[in-house]
Image 1 (cartoon, rainbow, N blue to C red):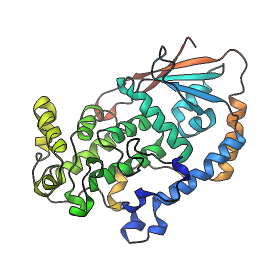
Image 2 (tube, rainbow, N blue to C red):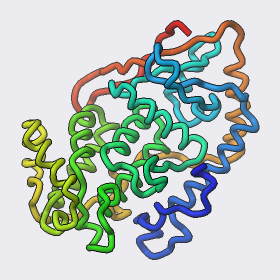
Image 3 (cartoon, rainbow, N blue to C red):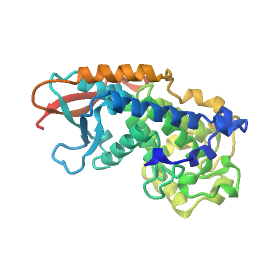
Amino acid sequence: MAGQLAGSQLVAFCQCEACSHGFKDYCAIKYGYAAHMQIVPTLLVNGLQGKLHLGYKVDQPEDVITCHSVLLCFWSPTIRKAVYDSDQPVTHIWIDFFQMGARSVFLWKQIVQWCYTGRLLDEFTLSEVTIGRRDDIEALWNAATSLEMYELANYCMRHIIVKYTWGLACLSNPALGLPRHCPYNVYGPYLVFVHNQRGHRFQRLFQFMVDLITARGPLQKQARDRATPGTIWSWATYSTGDMGFAEWIDSLGGITHEYRDGFLPTPYNQWYKYWFPIPPRTPVDVRLWAEIHANTVRLEGPPVALLGTWRQVGLGPLAMDEWEFHRVPN
């Protein structure tokens, strides 16, 4: 499992405050892993061993991922509220993330993997640093944010920063130039353009993308020299296929523009704009929470299934969209 790996490839490309000053032993990613791997055993030892079955479609029972209820309820206040509001034991939760269909199964797999291990791996390369070759990591950030899993969202943001700093997800060789000269394909920016203009939570990622593209075009000269044909083709296709998207990119300077005043949004002192503030957790607090959770979900009656529907409330930055859950046949 990912959490059993001795080291982290992601640390090598991290630009947190400690890493920026050369102190890799004090890397924020390492500390995050260590804290996560203390929390998980505490929850599993002190909480009930009940499982939640997770999928995207009620009539697709074969596409189901299983996770301990105590873990998912701990990391996701949204799931916790849905489970606690039920007067009968919840065993199944169905969520189709932003109408992505079967792709929601992939997102559930990644969410559950992170719940247990605190890490994510690219399913093709089994590497931490190549996640996001299309728009996987941005979609996962959105899914985590929608479930109020802000630790996972912040972890995804580390991957996003590495993706757009080094270009590894586009198979760019980091030895061929400076990090800021890396290319990146169109899929992540396009997903953010479509999904991240509503609500202050989701606009964190939208603002990152605005800052990134404003700083320099994705295919400015040095980046284009390092880009694969597939990366170049992706921009040519989407820039002509969606005029709204093309106009947005042009308003930020265009695909090939050179650096403007300012810096790429990658150094540690710029992360505060894209980060969710999270209070620290202590083992004692986690143990007490697990015991309370066990008493809360110890219910009588036949098990029930919940279907999540994405409810849009409000407009633009003031939108307060959220998951709304209804019982469905189990």
